[in-house]
Amino acid sequence: MTNQTRLASTDELESIFQRELATDRWAATETAYALAVRHRDLGDWPASQEWAQQCLRLLEGFPSETEEQVATGRTSVGGVQLPTYLHSGVVEERFGIFG
Image (spheres, rainbow, N blue to C red):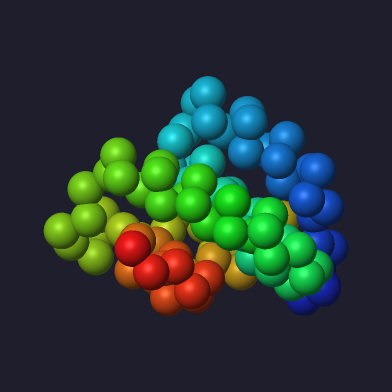
């Protein structure tokens, strides 16, 4: 097995997101974060901001009082590294969103 994980395209990630949205909202939140990162890395700042906002909207539905509640379930999605903890502060900081 190799350390080189192929990065999923934004279309592939969006397809994953749509599936997860119907079945696992936390996984969909993680994928929305991954989409924000992919679009940012591709230089598409408007799409990156849209996905960061989508991630924030989804995060509103989850408790965030403890580390356990905000711990990511996966280390990466589609080759995009996830933070260890996913909460609004992380998203806002990494994508320059100021409420």
